Image (cartoon, rainbow, N blue to C red; front, side, top):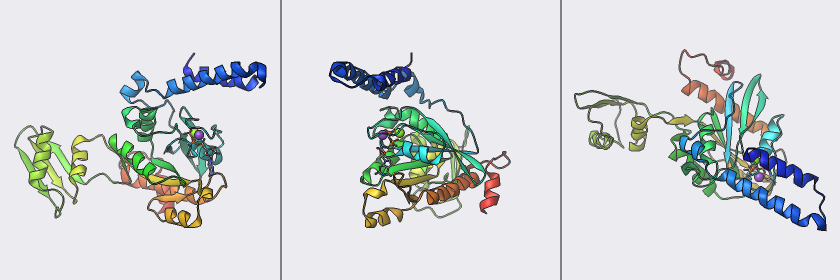
Length: 311
Ligand SMILES: Nc1nc2c(ncn2[C@@H]2O[C@H](COP(=O)(O)OP(=O)(O)OP(=O)(O)O)[C@@H](O)[C@H]2O)c(=O)[nH]1
Ligand SMILES: [K+]
Ligand SMILES: [Mg+2]
């Protein structure tokens, strides 16, 4: 029996056990077991975390949106509201332990929405189920970063750092740099624009650091050293991200207003069903972006239809 099944067995037993003096210890023991199994699940499993595999959920529909956030920000509540799938929501952290897919039907398209376990600081190093969650995020067309409006900004920068550290670039486009390693001939460096952040010397130093001594480099835009490194390393994912501040029913109007004005941000309340229509509209726009900027030309693209739709 897998851990998830054991958890579900115990939960069922707790549910059918009457609460009284005689069952007090039995229930206590069951709950302790439950906590132990939950903790075990949150340990990085060696095979999964070293390979960085995601949860096994089939892609379906026209696009995939992943819900990323700290525990208990309301991801599951959101999935249950927007789709016909029910994902358990509760006030304790790590209620969700796997990837739960639902479908949003919007303007004739099927958008796959993935509810995921909460991630915490250190997720990228394998803390909790972080690596699996991040591996799923990499396969999405758009990430919704769900944040608790009652908590500080620090949660947002922590999550961004986690995603950055595994090569996910949020709301950035691929740097317009041509880079081709060669067999010989040294480093040929050119640019079509004035560079204010990188110089030929810096580019050479960086390349030598990566033991690259022969290559053709052409900057077509004023990129930073970090962006150049991204190009050398490759394997980066450039993804639109919508920051969704949930639970605005708990904060002042002034604070709501401040959050709503932030770039790429939407404020909502799942509890009071506030602003969900607007969130869908924004999501739709972000999905159209992935179509325009990242899908290869000539490739059959299910979202091409949408682009014509939204101009
Ligand atoms: N006040 C308020 N509470 C909310 C809102 N949305 C969700 N909640 C509550 O927040 C708690 C956590 O919700 P979940 O949906 O379980 O959160 P989650 O992000 O899926 O949590 P994990 O699966 O544990 O990571 C629950 O008690 C919800 O009822 C909201 O808009 N306002
Ligand atoms: K929760
Ligand atoms: Mg959840």
